[in-house]
Amino acid sequence: MFQYRKIASKSEDLLSIGALRASGSEGHFNFRIALFVAIDGVPVGMVLSYRLPDPYD
Image: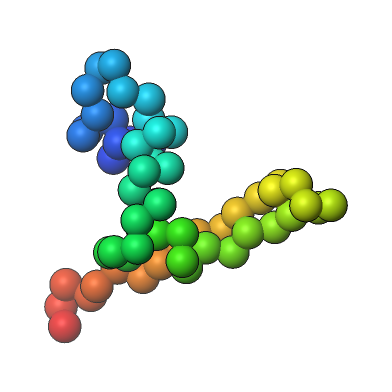
């Protein structure tokens, strides 16, 4: 959320920005690398982690 506050306008919802970014298929942060958990077909959780490029490589 901290990062989204930097790029959002005052009228934008921070969760909406995150959802929009995760809905894409480019870059390090996207839904294709997420693990979703559902109980009886109802989503109850998600884990999304990714490695950033090593700045020293």
